[in-house]
Length: 424
Length: 183
Image (spheres, rainbow over the protein chains, first blue to last red):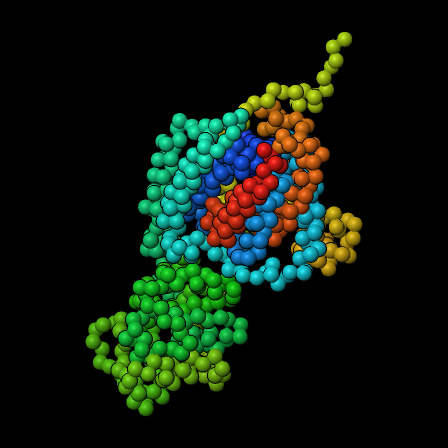
């Protein structure tokens, strides 16, 4: 499973060599595209040529298709690679300054390094100015520290914006890029002055466009459903189910909730409305199984903010919760557990008072395992002692009573992912 | 007596070849970026080296000042080596690659590319202030054309696409305002 860096397969020296090779490829791609020369680079913005849009968006589309194709095939873990976090307004202001800077300066940081090496004297001045700009930023950041850290959305992707899976987004972004190329070629041929180079649409452009479009459509077509994703991780995760390593007993779940000072316990009730209204744990979140997939990005966000989060999926018995757990595993939501024995076991353990008061009554087994084995006087939701008091994070008396009644299963793993990255 | 050329002059005098088709250049960049993410989990970057060089220089001149600036303390100060980061190796590669490619294709020449209405010195001043504005913006946006627009674009970061769109919009608008700089 890639990326390699996440498994430390390379060592420090190996990684340095790889970075050097990557730098060489990076510079080569920029240099042959014409970006070792500010006059050629800025030509895009006067439509003397269309080089920046062509090279840049080709690079984005090629890399995007390769990345998400690999993710779809289960070769690359998208959760581990660096995706720039979104800071909305600082990004807008920074982007605007970069747009002004590239015209006046004639370069961007990467191309200025390439051009400086190719002895372009203006690039040396750009690099000097760039250092001064960086110095000014580090010295003035305190004046707008609040703004610089404002409008933070974390690892926000276009999939979150469009509410679509990555395969779909990849396909439509490819379509958009091809349309952009067409407009760019048209604009260059229309607007360029006679002494500048024509757009020079290569003869193979239509064929290449069709091939790229087909590959992008392929990524869309093979984009795995959550069941296919589960199959990719089933080898390691399915045994945990069979060995009952992820089914936490009601006593343990109650204890974990009581420990909220250290752990952020998220109880996810995946049953349908009817059963949920009859009885549910207080502080549980009601997300029916059918809607669970769309809640995954939110879970990821919770984990990002609070790495010590434990997810506990809950259903009447274990059936639906197990499905839900598989989905969470398929999407690599960390620290997901099942309420062992479901709410039926919860009531069995904590329902003594409610049963004595007649609010909850035992039902005759009707053979349906995945159903509540109790009758309820009314649809009181969480207004039962079993649902409220025993799920109360403050109730230390209960905690004391049950502390030796379970074998602990819940182990919280720390955050995974790149330690840092991007232009950090 | 024929003047003997130095090796350096020989590199400079190589005949200038035309640039490649930028779509081909784009494929090279795209594959490189993909391999980078596949192997190192990081994309491409450039503006970070400016930040680290800045940290290094400030630490050299005024070490105590580093501790008081949040932007600097991230990269320098104490026992921290500002260059102990993947970006340093990548930039070494960039310099090697740029040298090899520009020499091979005969574009390794001391010159000042500029618009026909701008003097050489004028172009230098522009480049200096343009670099200043660009890098100020790149620090604000937490990445530049390579770190945000290219890498973030390919990994479908929403913020990176926004930054890229705003950057292109402002670049075209600025170009329209200062036509004389390059036309």
